[in-house]
Length: 459
Image 1 (cartoon, rainbow, N blue to C red):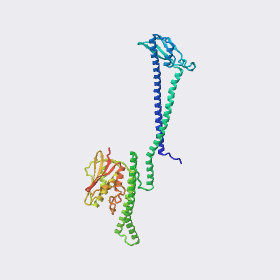
Image 2 (image 1 turned 135 degrees about the vertical axis):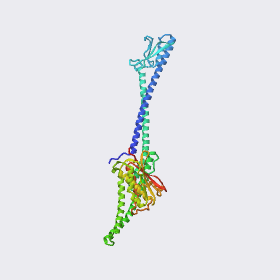
Image 3 (image 1 turned 120 degrees about the vertical axis):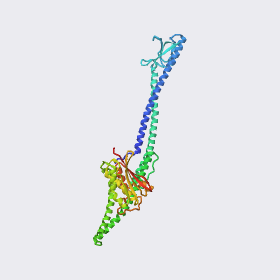
Image 4 (image 1 turned 135 degrees about the horizontal axis):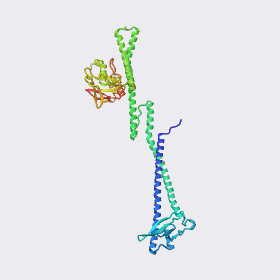
C-alpha cells in the first residue's frame, strides 16, 4: 500500500518551494538592477575620463594658441583618455593625432581598430567651441569594459547563489518546524478521535494556542462532552425504559398467565386492567417511534401554506382531554385572532405544539392554566405556550431539549401520563428545526414558563 505523504512534509515542501521561488526572483531582480547600475557607473566613469582629457586639451590649446599640439602633449592626452585620439577643427579636419597608446605594443590591441567606436567631446576655449577631441578606445580597453560587468555578474551570482541556497535550506527547516507545530495538534486530535471511537468518551485534548487550532480543540472537547452526555443519557434512558416497561409487562404477563391458568375469571375489570397494561407498553413504544420519526422529519415533511392560528387551535383541541383529566384550563387562540400564514408541514408543527402543551399540562398544578397564542413580531411568526407551573431550575435549562433528559429523574410514568420518557421536548425541537424554525425557553420563573416557537412568515 502506498504511504501517503504527511501534511507536515507537504507543508514544508510547499513553503520551502515558495521561499525558493521568491528568493530566485528577488535575486534576479537584484542582479539585474545592480549590474545595470554598475554598467552605468562604468560608462559615467569613462565619460568623465574623456571630459578630463578634453579639459587638459583645452588648457594646452589655450597655452599654445593652436590645435596642433606636440607629440609629447598628445601622448599625455592619450594616457589620460585611455586610448588613441585625434584633435579636429570645427570643420572636422584632423589637426593632430596619435595612433598608439604609450606603453602598449602594436600587436596587443594598442593600435586604433576600425571596430572601435570613437567618442567625441567638444573643445571649448573662452566660451567658443574651437574643435573636438575624438577618442578611440583601445580593443584592450573595450575588452576590459566588457569583462568588468561580466566578472561582477559572476561574483554577484555566486554570492547570491550561496546566500540563496543557505536561505532556502534555513527556510525549509523553519517551514518543517512550523508545519510540525501546525500538524501536531491534528495528530493529537486524530489519536483522541480513535480513543473516542474505541469507547473512551472521557478523552479530551488541550486546545492549541493559535486561534483556529484553539477553536478546533474547543469544538472537539464540546463534541466529546456531548457524546459522553448522550451516552450517559442513553444508558439512563435504557435503565428507565427497562424499569418503566417492567411494571406493565409484568402485570400484563401475570394477568394473561392467570387468565390462561383459570386462576381469575375473564371479567370486565380484569380485562380492563390487562388492556391498560398493554396500552402502557404501547405508549412507550409509540414514544420511541415518534422520536425516530422526528429525527427524519426534514426528509418526510410535506410543505403547504397554512394558517398557524388554525394549527395552534388544532393542537389545543387534540390535547383538551388530557387537560381535562389533569384539571388544568387550556386557553387557545381567540376566535378573532387574525390569520398568520406559514409554509410548513402542518402535521409536524401541530405535533410540535401538542408536545409543548402536553409538557405544560404535566408540570402545571391542578387548577392552573396554560395559554397558547400566535403573533407576528419582527416579520416572523411566533407561537407561545405559557403555563403557571413551578418553572424550570436554571441548572436544567441547557439540557431540557436533550433526548431522554428529565429534570426530575425520580419521576416515573404513571398510567395516563405523557412525556415520562423525556423525549417530548426533544421531538418538539426536532420538528421545529425540520420546518426551518426555532424552539426555545423564552422565560421561566416560579410563576411559570413560556416556550416560544419561531417560524418564517409566508411572503
